[in-house]
Length: 378
Image (cartoon, rainbow, N blue to C red; front, side):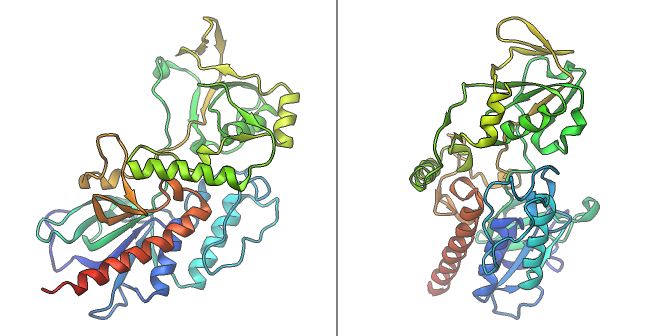
């Protein structure tokens, strides 16, 4: 974008980055508490700009695979001020949930600017209280520099699929893809498919693909599947564990990734079909398959990495938020070392119910910070 030209800069008290569940929740509470869209704010009014990299409403739900229906998706929490999601159980989640998000944006007149991809956030060298947001619009065209006093970051994880580095991966002649690339089981019809991962997504895709292909399931550790329903107590324990890691500034996953696996009718059926014959991780990838842990080889046409995601925070790197342990310590949703930055959908708030709560909590904390700053004598 070149040297900032102050006549072209846009100023907003708050910038919300991301318009998934957490970002929309934050936007809702900001608008409800009198923060005005920057384009409409009068002098002296608090203002907000809401940016989203997607081409339309829905966040990561826009990209879920076609076979993930409203009947099979994990619980979806309603957006604030909205009724519960009402959709036919057979409806694909990648259409039903984005439609619900779009209805929310229309109903509450949420002024999301999209597609806008934030590429870098840095301190303003001319004003230590402000941040500079560099962003690209359609076709990668740089947008005017955006200056702000605070960031509510709700960029999620979908844009950062994690695939572990494995010896021989570059030489594999078959297809390698991540959960984020998966569309439908029929794409693997008649093939031999290795599925890597021990989570809910891995098991769901394993069962789908097994209907049309020969599957081989690999995990680093022996999966533990527990009997009985997932209780509120177990949920609280999972959340507490993630909160403690965030408090200590340790690297974290989502609450969902810490809840473990439970036997369901579909998993019992998969067990009866012999689909849960788990193999330890292979030693290396060969041009035509994998070298197994026992020294044998297995021919594969495709490897599907259901190995999770990382938080999309690369645009915040110039701020130096990560500590030596590789994590980011938070107080509530605010970064401990820089309370101008709030991380929503990070750690304990990486679930639909957690995202709603985080959006409300972040707005409350941020507005309180603004009030304290305003009360300080010049």
